[in-house]
Image (tube, rainbow, N blue to C red; front, side, top):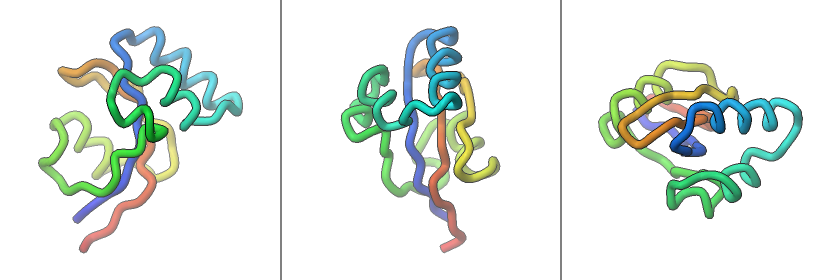
Length: 93
């Protein structure tokens, strides 16, 4: 199995909630990632590319490989901080 996802990583849960509300109100996920994410992927709009189970931390994998596609999940807490995660694709191969 493999998946593609994008995310926004911040250190503060309240900020994560605010960003999610902005996206749900119509703001662009990629623009929010560039502006707020502390992950290097932020400069790519949060795009993490394609990865397999076990390549990300457990909490992240759990969302990516079990939850709905094209939905903003989070805040999801990991050792790195708080994430908003959007699973863009997932397949069995």
